[in-house]
Image 1 (spheres, helix red, strand yellow):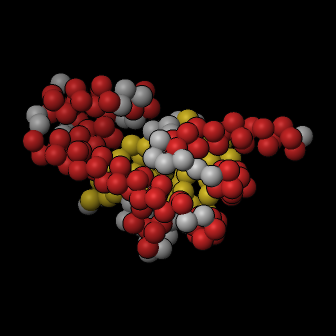
Image 2: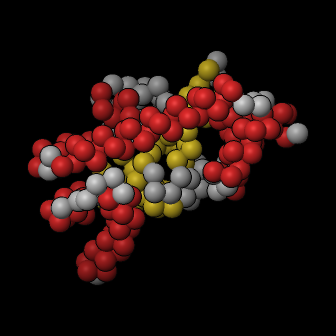
Amino acid sequence: MRNLYINYLSSMIKPFIQTLEQIAPLSDGLKKAFKKGFKKVEIKKGQILLSEGEVCSNAYFMVNGLARLYYLIKGKEVTNRFILPKSVAISYYSFFSQKPSFEYIDVLSDSRALVISKQEMDKIYLDFPELHKIMQGMLQQSHIESEERAMILRKLSAKEKYSIMRSKFPEVFNSASTEQIATFLGVTRETLSR
C-alpha cells in the first residue's frame, strides 16, 4: 500500500518537477527533497485555502483543477488571479513576509494539488541553494504576468480583454462564474454578458 502511495505521489510531482525544470535543472537531491516535503491533497470545489487576515503558511501546486485569488472591496469580490493547473496557489506577499494576507484563495473545481508548508520550504531552501535561482525565475514570471494583465486592463477594450482571456485561459470559462471573470477583466457583469 505504501508503494502505491509513493508511486501516486511521484506521478503527481512529475508535472511540478517538469514545470521547475523549464526554469533551471534540478539536482536529484532536490527532486527527492520535494518528494519528501510535498503532500498530496484532494480539494473540493468551494474550499477556501486562505482567508484575508490569515498568514499564508502553505503553497499549493495545482496538479489539476482551478483556483483563484481574490480580495474584497466594500464587500464585493474582485478576482486578482486565476490559478490554473501547473501553477502555484499562494499569496506571495503573505507567504514570504509571514504577514496576514489581504487576499483569499478559493477552489473553483474539484482539484488535486501538492502542498508544502513554509517551514518545509525554508528547510529545502537551506539544503539546496540552487532553489534560489528557480524561485527567482518563478517570481519573475509571476511579475511579468501581473504586468501584462495590468497593461491589458488599462489599454484594451472589454471585447479585446475577453478575446485574450478566451484564447489564453479557456479552462477558466468551464469553472468560474461570469461575475468572477468580469471582475478579473475589470468590466461589469452586464458588459461581459454582452
